Each structure stands twice: as structure tokens, then as C-alpha cells.
Amino acid sequence: MHSDQLVRTFVEYYEERGHRRITGSTLLPPPGDSVLFTTSGMHPLTPYLEGRPHPLGKRLVNVQRCLRTTDLDEVGDATHLTVFEMLGTWSLGDYEGPVSLDWGYGLLTEGLGVDPGLLHATAFAGDGRTGPDTASVELWQRLGVPVELTVEDNWWPNGSGGPVGPCGPDSEIFLWSGDGPPQSTPTRDDRWVEVWNHVTMTHRRLDDGSLVPLPQRNVDTGLGLERLASLLQGTSSVFECDVFEPWRRLVPALWTLEEPSLRLVCDHLRSAVVLFGDGVRPASTGQGYVLRRLLRRVLTVLRREDASHGIEDLPEELVGHSSDHFRQDMRPGDVLRMLREEEHRFDRLLERGRRVLTRPRFQGPLSEEDFHHLHDTHGLPRDLITGLREE
Ligand code: SER
Image (cartoon, rainbow, N blue to C red; front, side, top):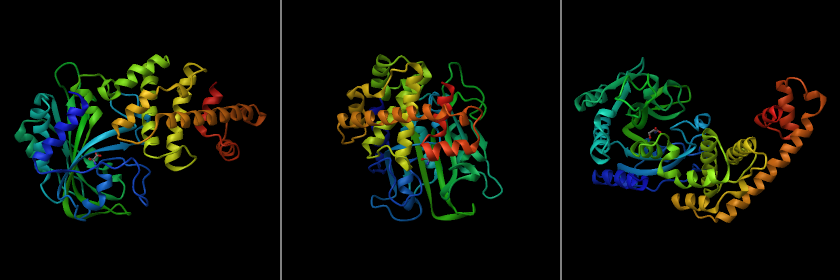
């Protein structure tokens, strides 16, 4: 199933169940928000989860582009991306978690044709503060889906050490990606891939870590589009699903790269193009610095394979493909010009770095003070210094 069709099937299924589609936000959270980027579909909905009435009612569905810097080191494996799309549904003080899980199961098995025997669920086992999620466990037992109980992995976000804001127990749906019949459980075998998280948002976490009940019980679900598309399309990683089709076709023709580098380059360049489209420009702080780091990481990988490689040759088709997909209004020529400028800036920095690092002070092992000095006085970030010293 093509990812566009997957999105349509998802949205229509929830519209038939009384949900209204809301427009997804950009990657940039509203001013005053404490995080740099929209990291999940629920993020822009926080005020409504905390009790403000939503103009479109109590049942919502959407497609939200997200960016997670926390997953950067995992990009290149079979399932993680920097920018990805999350299909989300919400019950704002309306139906409860088991209804959401039952519908999710129905959509996966009947709507999308997943073999029920390839599903596994997890649910919250309870801790000293809140009890076990027996309602979800009973639902899974009734549906005949095996369920594993955990504490930390099934409290969203981030177990007991999560950030302030709405949170609660979640029940996650995993799909078997192995070749043979399913084995073991999601916490013990990573061929179980997490596809859909259903959070019953019951509490708000305060600054001191304590939990207070929310004025209403909500359900917040998130399903990673590329992950599910790749599982339904039977590809071995998200990078082979249809979302990456033009990247897989055009990038290897441009640069010869080993598979892990190819994945990283496709992920980071695509993410950078989406960031440009949402109005971010390379900078030395904040959102712009994340964009700059993505581009520098790409350049470092490309140059490692071949010193003459550069991103200025990126085909316009790839930029156009992203802006069409994310309905962004930018001219590919402008993006390519900004990529070129950033590449030149990086080259000047490399030159300066090589020069400075020949000084006697930097010949032996570097201390923390050296790293600070190189950063503050010469603008050389740590990863760049480390790379230059390995040359
Ligand atoms: N907020 C949950 C997540 O990001 C479900 O949307 O997984």
C-alpha cells in the first residue's frame, strides 16, 4: 500500500468514527514554547489536552510532521528518521483508551490487512504512584493479542523521568518484522517494531516531578507513517518505503556511498529541505543550529567517502518532491543556493580548523579547556575538531 493511500485510509477510518481532521502544524512550535521543534502530533494540542475546548470538538485526527533530535544517533537503523510524519488521533475527554485500542486493532487488521497473528501489545504494569492499566490488558486479552507489561516504557512521555506537561500510561502496538513466525516479546526481541502508541493522558507532570490529575481524561495516539508503510510494503527499512523513492533513485547516482552513509545522507538532507521549507535558516544557535549540524554531518560523511563531494549538486527534483509532499512554498533554486552558501561556510571553517590545529598546543590529547577555547575563540565545534584530528 502506497503511503498516500495509507494516510487516506487512516483519516477516513477515523472520520467515519466521528473525528474531525485538523491541519498539522509546521515543525516550529508556537513562540514561547520551550522545545525547539514539534516532536509529536500531540505537541500542538497541549492546551486542549489540559482542558481548553477545541473548536472542532472532542475527536480529532491529523497528520503531523515531527522532528526528533533525540533519535539522531539511531538514524540509519531500520526504523528511525529525523523528520517523519505521525498519524494521530485524539479523544479530548471523550472515549477511553480501550475504545481507541479496539479501533486501532480494527484499522490495522481489517482496514490495512495486517495478520492479527503478527501483533503484540504492551501495557503499563503500575508503579508506586498509579495502578496497572487493567482496562487495556483486558481489551488485548479479549482480542487475543499477547500483551507484555512494563513500567518505564509504558508511561508516556519518557517513563518516570519525563518532562513537565500532560502524561499517562500508554499501550503500544508492535508488529513482527522477522522472517519466521513471531517469537518472544517486544522488550526482548527488537524484530518487534513499535508502530502505534495509545496514551491515556490522565495526569500533568509538574516541575518537581509530581503528578496531578488532568481536568479530563484524554487519549492521544501516534503512528509513524514511514515505519508502518515500510512494514506493509515489506521493505527492510524505512529508507526503502515509497516515501524515499526519489532519494533512493537519485542519491546513489550522485555519490557512491555505503548503505549506512546513504541512509544518513538521505535522512539529513531530506530533513534539511523540510526545515528550509518551514522557514529555518542555518545559524549558530537554536533551530538554525540543528539545521547547520544536519548539513555538516552530511558534508562530513560525503567528504569522508570522496573529498570532492559536495551537496550543491543535489537534484532540484528532490527539493521539489519534499516541498510538494509537505505543501511548502519554496523555490528549489533558493534551497540549492542556501545549501551552497552553507557548504562554503563549512569549507572556510575546515580550513581555519586545520590551520589552528597545527599549533603546538593542540598536538597532544585535548583537554576540556582546549575544546572550549577552540569553540569560543575559533568557532570550531567539538565534533569537527575530532573529525579533523582523525584526518
Ligand atoms: N504522543 C505519543 C507519541 O508521540 C502518541 O502520540 O508517541
